[in-house]
Length: 191
Image 1 (cartoon, rainbow, N blue to C red):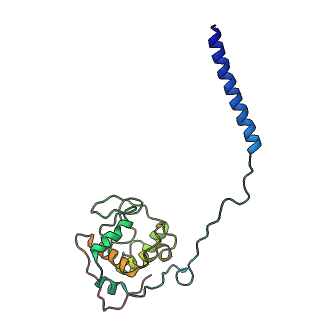
Image 2: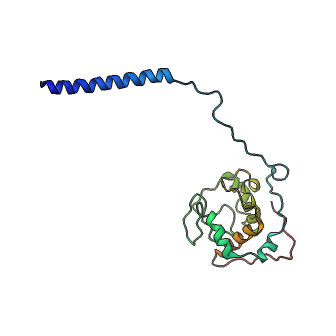
Image 3: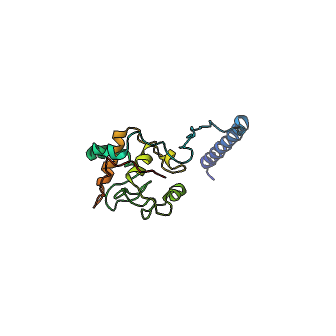
């Protein structure tokens, strides 16, 4: 064999030997035991009162009154927050959340091809419950407070005007939008 080839192979083997020795030694020196308590515990405040029972606190102003002044065009701008998880076009794809075309007055947990969380399925009462204006208003205010256990990670829209604009926009996403609620009628009870 050529002496240069022998030197090259020897250098390669010596390098591998040194690297493995350093690896084994460093693991022995810098080894750390698993901690008794992992990381930081992030504790979210649990809702109290009615919210703990699965009901959100009633909105100060009924959605029917808010919809009188709602602007669907402004709601389209608010919908940009939703587009990361939802599509809004007719026949649009399901994303992290279901397509929202025709969502107003659609049976809850009924969009074909989407796997809903157990909490939403329970809330839907087997399809008997629909996404009414009231349900949408409460759900969009605080999804996790209104339907405890929902997989929807959105924090909610706290401003009445912003929420009403979004609901007006969602109302427009339909071939035949349902009539808007009467602003003079008493607010229906939810849940």
